[in-house]
Length: 288
Ligand SMILES: C[S@@+](CC[C@H](N)C(=O)[O-])C[C@H]1O[C@@H](n2cnc3c(N)ncnc32)[C@H](O)[C@@H]1O
Image (cartoon, rainbow, N blue to C red; front, side, top):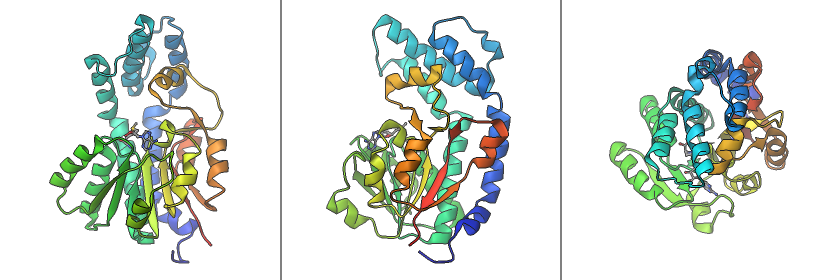
């Protein structure tokens, strides 16, 4: 990696995206505490005045209520149309889209600086973040080789559709459970230096996956909501039922420190502006 890449250069190159992110967070999540407290009540099956919950959280509220309803009936069903629709509303919602776009723009802006040989994505799932990354590259007229991974075979169909929509994209898909070390074939496909980006995958695995990721990723952009305070809210307890974990920022940072020695806290301003208890986007790299 070029010596010219340092904290200041990175901060400067991301400043426009950062400003937008801070503005968005203030506008949408300034009242996060109202939702956090209300979600605790919802979880305890106490009445809440929904009109007082900021609109930005209504999709989560709906999904949460469906999950709890299922729990009360003792019938959890991922295929329930109501549940699927509620999660589709979250993933089609304004924030999810904006958050994904932000991660994609950070990754590609950094890629312009670092010039990685491979863009690596983990936990690509339904491919929403992959699509946003392809769109961002198309806009910027760059086309880096991508290694896109997930642990579930169904994602191969998703990749097929992305390739149809982005015929120029150089996508090499691999199945990879990040709880396991990367296999030799995958390692061979990832040319170094590599830039890894992801959203909500570490949240569904564990901190120990970082050791595996670090074996193939020189530069990382992580989009997981890491708890600074360790306090859990009703929504954490409800979404734990579908595998989402509350990861502590301290645990993740301690693990990252073993493999990376440079950090840029992309969302620091946003966090301070709304007194958020989360780190949402973290950039790390190693400098020898
Ligand atoms: C909430 S989805 C996020 C999907 C996508 N990253 C996005 O932001 O739209 C979590 C993804 O993590 C994947 N996943 C869960 N456990 C995993 C593991 N151990 N290794 C790799 N991927 C995993 C799931 O298959 C799923 O696609």
